[in-house]
Image 1 (cartoon, rainbow, N blue to C red):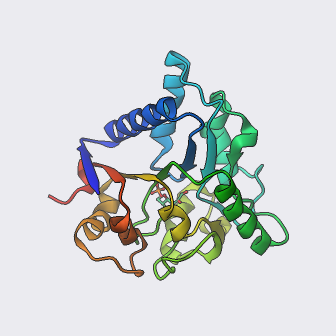
Image 2 (cartoon, rainbow, N blue to C red; image 1 turned 30 degrees about the vertical axis):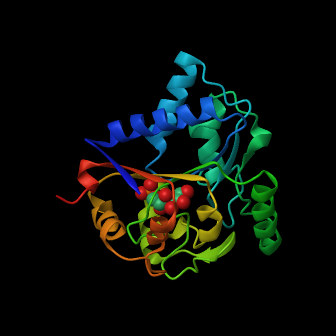
Length: 240
Ligand code: F6R
């Protein structure tokens, strides 16, 4: 794993955007794996600015998001589909039909898991996967204890994840308790991974990732076994 240390959130977002733009312009028809949450918001902002100023085109880009809450439709302001449209897709020239987010509001969620996993495979897999990390080491919504062999599946969110995500909702009780997420093996099949880490609240998780061993109790630890991982972390997240 290669680590790029930057001063702050702003610099992390700029560096991440530069990294993504480089791949989007060099790899024709790139398949991007995308994350939501607080961490990549600044990165999407920079990508939009770059699109407006430099015209980097996303017409040939296909995207797959990591996860979605169960029970929320894409029109719900708290859904990850809404987040992606609102904070990124609506502001660039991407073809919305090539943007994929697992659906959290279909009757048969098991079928949706299979459909999503197959869709990624049919598209030739993900070239560059963007990840954030939970303070408990989750990637996607793969909480501690998730099998490293897991494919797209349904999860019960950990209480710490529900609490951390409550900041996006009016009240804690509104946060869905279940989600659909790419599995750990799905993520590990990506050709390249870019992990973004910012802030004091991620310090312990990053330290564990860098110095701990590979263990299902700490899902992100599997990234040590991936041949092409780059971490962009800000000072606040890096242990002194
Ligand atoms: C989001 C996702 C999660 C987040 C993680 C960190 O699609 O898959 O793993 O990356 O929960 O969230 P933030 O960035 O809000 O700290």
